[in-house]
Image (cartoon, rainbow, N blue to C red; front, top):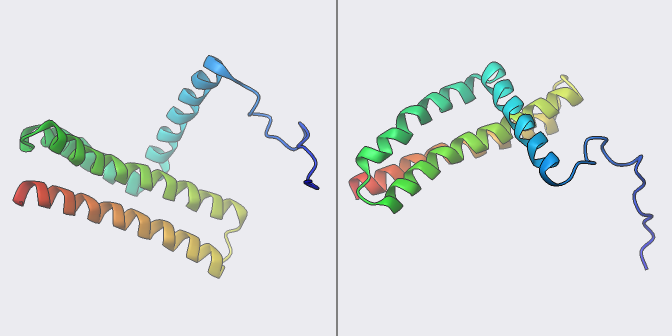
Length: 132
């Protein structure tokens, strides 16, 4: 038997009550706000988005097969996804405290490392498909 009491409505976020199409509609606008915030506040996201704006169309010209195109584009989009998550981690850490702390540095460095791996992934995927 569990000793944990069921969560009361007080414990839940006030933004969690929506369901169905209303939730999907709200999520769309929250996502658009997230894109706008990332574009406005994150230099790395802007740079990677501009790189994606070049590489995604280029994949249509360079890839020989639809699956190759899909993999090339997916590798580029993965960079944007990981950058957005990294930016969210950084903003959360900064919200908690701006003081230098080993755990804050670790969180930010690990997030940065994930972006680096995503970028290396683009190089490997594109290199293997174009040169292999």
